[in-house]
Length: 383
Image (cartoon, rainbow, N blue to C red; front, side):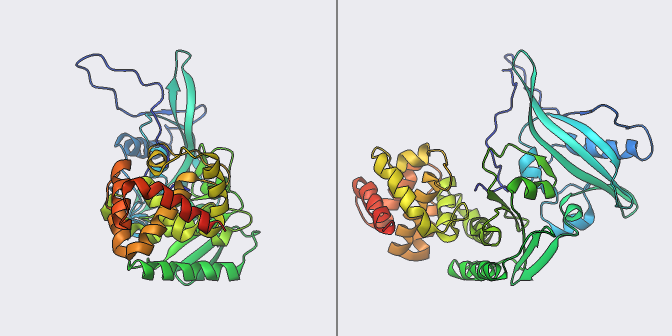
């Protein structure tokens, strides 16, 4: 599934109105309060002012805020763990809950709805409902993430570099987890990148439940609640799968390969293709994805690599033609020229034409033959 460090969804700001000539659009953040919220008492007034100040500052996933917990800033390069989900250009934030956090000393819970307003009927279209905390640290109120507070009593099992974190009633397959931990080391070695000392791997039966543990109580995930998200900079993985919770390696591949990919400005589908080839997709190994991909391409002979890069078909179940198709191209390029060839493909830029031209050159074939060779390789892999 899509990573979370870079924005998960390309969302249009709802309800936007084209500015009049010579005017700049209003980009100010509006922070309001819902019914029954006390923002005048002590310490509610101070905490609300802290939260409003943070939101109004235009939080950036690339820069830490001094309003956040120093302890969490030392632990995570991006301390606001929900940054890439909730700050996507929406301007209306409504605090719907501000009260002492049950069971936590000197800690307050803040729940916020972020939404857009659309159409003449002024319909509210929510992007997210999420929670953060305010806590006392070094003699002052600071903001803090939900994740360590909501999962403090979950099971923690460290195997190799991976810390598996899961609810108390969730079963745990140690054998599957050991294979996943071994995958981390082998992938890092294969791509000559230093693996993180620790990757925190949170999993439940349902991605909505896992993201809720991070504080994201609502987010438009669609109807398929099996999947994963990764935070490459903070070395975090969030998985929802009732059958393969310990073995969802696609998101781990995103974390491991980030040092390799980050300097190359690779096209999104080239990145996803690489991690699908190495780590599978939707909890399914690369090889197991091939029969479904072949069946789809046989039914759509008009599809080309360039058309897929330009406008990929929508995911259906475990089949993602963009992810799976580019995974095959990555394998072809690697088989032809090793790690240097993969680096060249990833460094070709984001334009579909540039990716296709570079792939043909690396495979040492005329560009007109690329799609045929690609389909032939898929047919062979699907056997």
